Image (cartoon, rainbow, N blue to C red):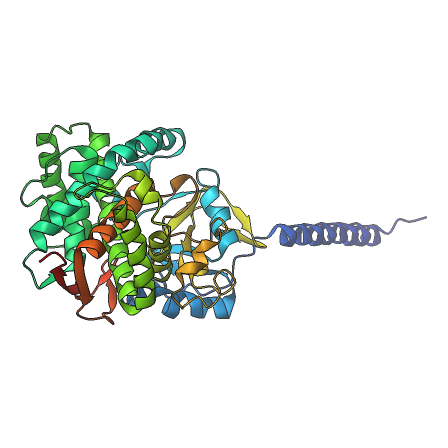
Length: 447
């Protein structure tokens, strides 16, 4: 019987096509199952993305209201965008804070603009990862442990009182924000580091800070250029003051950056809230009157006295909740991250925000109202995050707390004061500050 070759070839080809098609279909199904599902959101224009909207909202201190919240309403608590040239996922909520801040070095790492890295220094703690970060942080933590704080309290008391006597006695009006900036600067150097503050040092440091979020363009006249030059001057000042190791210099610069504007802003917002809520001020004033009633005239505060300032710390924390000194911070994914059913690709940025919990009724009832008593109850972890969290939680947290409480004590017990502009607006450049420097009328109680 004759074999029909053409018929055989037809069935061979037909079978091969079927096998290939079936294999392709199986592969496609498997691929789709493994396919990365990115968070919802809009990437904006090429390269710049939504950077302009982000910066405009940040400059007006309306980052949450004008940028984050509208996108949460549209896309949910996790959304993608493009900021400063990088694809970025913005996350909100206590669980998001816990997940990303506690997974530092495992899934994410700190991510700062190149200008910040150049100005703070490659050897500062914000650039260290893993074990080296742990070692440096441990050294900082040792100086701010219980024994270190006991030594610091009388030093800070003396510094605050001298500063107030020099700048407030005989004055009718002062800039509270400017006063606290120069004071916190002096405390870092003189009380913590034992380095005398030289004339012009504060102004030089502030020129460094001006460029930490500016484009890293070394062009004469640019913000970064001026800041870089100021950084070189700072190195000469610190070496002259017998601080010579590069790692130490870099961490001193970072410490001033971390403590200087943030603590000053927190103090300013505490007084803003006290001025707006006289009933709270009355309660706070009584707390401090009770403390000095058990002390002899001229005695400094002790660490035990600081522990008694429970209501004052509630007021300060509620002020920081409403006016966080930082809006959040960026991390970079060092591996593909599966989160909330989405994939955040390796190399993408992650932005967590303080506002994601601070302004959320899920965590704080009636979140836009000022209510210090809410801090009588224990706040769950990763809900109140003005100092960050996880391995990179602010190492200077206890120093900031001392600065705030001691400053409040000496102002309210030794001076009468009132705000010139109770509704003074807050702006940012790059960190938040009262737009007019928060001028206050002030007079000594002992004149």
